[in-house]
Length: 233
Image (cartoon, rainbow, N blue to C red; front, side, top):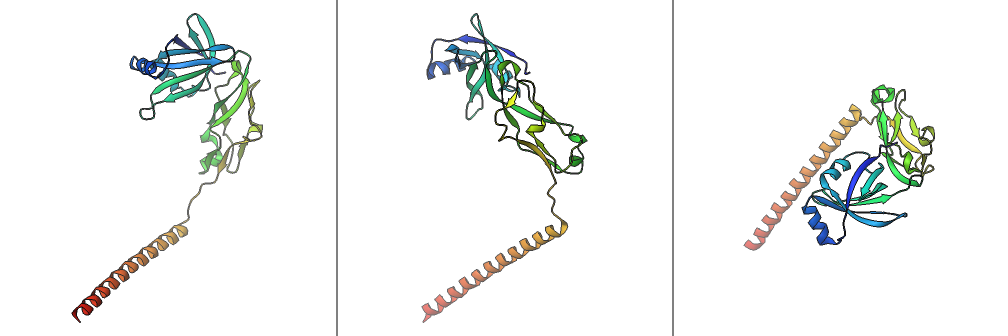
């Protein structure tokens, strides 16, 4: 399970663009905590603290214990809005969840032991179909990710979801759609003969282009001479 991190939030009474800008000038990021069990709460939090948390790979799949005043809530990051130019955070939406409520979210798919895969050692390429897998599980059982061991697998092998053991109470949200997670494929290497043919074709195209330019230039010169002769007459 992904470790639960703590976030201390300060409730705010004012809303609107002007208020949000004023908070950001003070180094605070505005946000909203909402859920089926609570009335939406407008808050702000320290930008430095948020910046540290948002660079964690598990930021969007981690369960947070958020404190607002004297009350604590369990919450997930629902949306983080970034400035389109600076990529700095400008607003945070948190979704309050109960302990046993089932939720759907994306978790990362990791791969290990690349150096122990015969297929990869022979030049094969790991073709990752899904970097993240959408799962459904109770809020208290969110895993940090799914790990696939590549040891012993050769070129042509496909890693399917039904062969991966998911943690207890965790299921793939779209098992029928997200069946293939990755494959080990043969490298695409052009032969020396193919490279020579491509080079010859490129050279021929360049020569044809040069001949076309010369022909066009000759035609222009002839047209100019004909024009001069007519003018002389």
